[in-house]
Image (cartoon, rainbow, N blue to C red; front, side):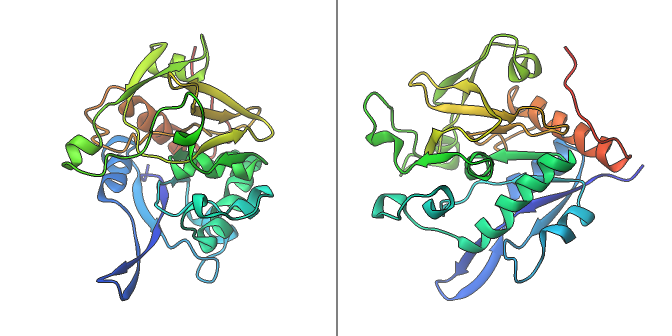
Length: 257
């Protein structure tokens, strides 16, 4: 059986501040290929180049990656402010309808950081523009200095709902994760189940209730050294299993108890 094709949602960049490019982190492709067992396929996040329908027919699953631009607040009915940061409206136009289509079809996706936020917004939820400004919240942003190892280092715990999907997948009620995000869930969307929280109660893990397929999404970055990390590996392995099942014709995914 062929490896499942995993569409990795890319991000728009300027090389040398002038050459436009679509790019994806190598660690995303490595996690998809080496841990999920899929063929990584970089998707240009622009509806002028590719349609949601074409993506659904081409790929067996999707990795909704992190990215510096944020989901535009107009997507959840709020006005743009300087605190909302930079945006990528073309990516919004691809990922939000893609999430909704995958939920309906049972086609698997794994949301990471911005991808986690996209899943919530796609299902009708909203976001805080800067969670570190909220009373009682910690700073979840990436450290501004240091090596990649220091920036992606484990920095806080995430506690899962007792007996929930993530608890069963990880085999533990609490795990350590990295943290490299500024925004966070404000209002959970319809059918969004928040299954894990940071110590300051920031939502960190979710899935879509009643969806027939794999919809697990996390606010941290499990793609960092996914093959070696005991939290990242089971997440990407389960995603790969779901993508293989979809490629073979199965349309439902459930984690074993």
